[in-house]
Image (cartoon, rainbow, N blue to C red; front, side, top):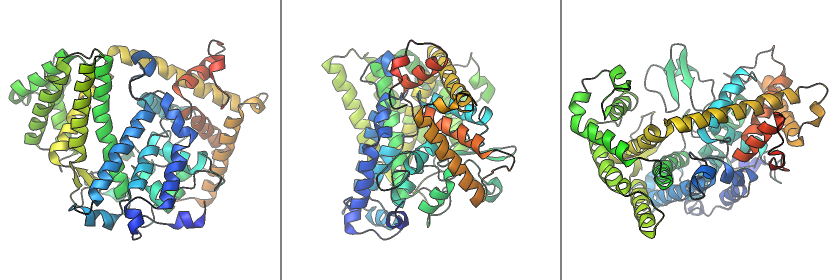
Length: 505
C-alpha cells in the first residue's frame, strides 16, 4: 500500500472537492472495486431466492449491491446539501458521496455461495474442521478481499484503498476476539451479545490475520464506532433489502397474502390478549395469529430500548398491513404491465420515504451509528424485515433445500483441505488455492511475530495448518453458487458438472 493513500485519514478536514464526491483518490477506489472480479462474481451469488428456481428478475448479490449504492449515495447527498440542516454535522464527521458509494459497492464482496446459509456453514466448518478460531464472517471476508486477496497494479496485495474507504467498509469494526470486560455492563453494539462466558461477536469486520490493517485504517476513530460514511452504507443496506426482499418474494409468488394477513390482523385485533401470553406460548405451534409479531415487539424492547416504542410499533404494523398486506399482496403478481407498475410504485414509494427518514442518531447510543432512521421509519423497516424472515426463511421447502446446500459446502471444504494436505498429491491443487494458502500462511507468520493485543495465536498451532485452513475458506468463499456445486461434485467423483468449474479455479 502506498504511504500517501494509507496515511490519509477520514477525520481530516474535507476539501470542497471531497464534500461533493469529486476527490480523485476516492473515485479511483470506487473504480477498483467495481472493476474487481469479486464484484462481477456477485451476479452469480444468491441473495435470498436462487435465480434458477425463481427467474432472472430476482435480485442477486450484484443487483442488490448496485441498489444499495444508489440508496447510499442519495442519503449522503441529502445530508451534505447546502440547504440541509445536517450539513454541518456531515462535514464535521466526513461525508463524501464517493466514499459512501465505494463502501456500498464493496459491502457484499465477502458473501460466500448460497447467501447467509453459506456464511453460517463456512463459519462452522472453519472453526470445527479447520481449526480457525475466528471462523468465517462475510463482513470480515469483505475486508480481507479488499486488503489482501484482490489485486491492483499499485500494491502487491489488495486494492490499495484509502483509509476512508476501508473504514467505511467496516460495519462491525472489531474482530471476533472482543474483550467483554472492557465493554462494561451496558448495552452492546449491534453484532455483539452477552453469554455466560462474556461477550460474543456474532458479526465482525476483520479476522485476526487482518486486524492490524483495520486498526491502521481507523486511526482517530472512537473504538467500536462506525464512521459516518459506514453508517450511511449500513442504513442503505437495511433499506434496500427490507424492500427488495419483499419485491422478490411477491414476484416469485411465494409470499402468501392469506398467511401474512392472518398474522397482521391477529396482532391488530388481539394484541392486548397476546401480551398476557408468556414467551413459550408465543413460540408454540398452536400459538394464535399475531404471536410472531408480539414476539418481535418484545425482542425490540429488550435489544433496542433506545428507540423501540409500543405506539410506534403499532403504527408501523398498521402502515405495513395497509400498504403491503391489503395493498400490494392483495393482487397476485402475474407479470402484466399493471402488476409491474403496482410493484414499482410500492418500491419507489418506500425507498423514497426511508431515504428521507435518515437523521443524526442520538449521542452515546451504542446500538446506533452516527446516523439512524427516525423512530417511525426504524419500526417500519423492522416490520418489513419480519415479513421475509417469518414467512419465507422458515418455509419447510426452503429449509430442506438449504440442508442440501450445506452438504455441498461441507464436501467442498473438507475435500479441498484434504487435497491441500495430501503429501502425494497436494502439488496438483488448483494454482489459485496454492496462492491463497501462501498468502494466509505468510499472514499468520507475521501475526505470530507482531502479536497484536487480544488476537490468540497458540504456540502449539502450526502456522502452515492455519494457512491451509484460511486458504481453503478464502477459495470456497470466492466461488459462485454454480462453481461451488461443480467443485463439490467433482471432489465427490461425479463428472456431471466437471466443465462448469471454470478456468479461474
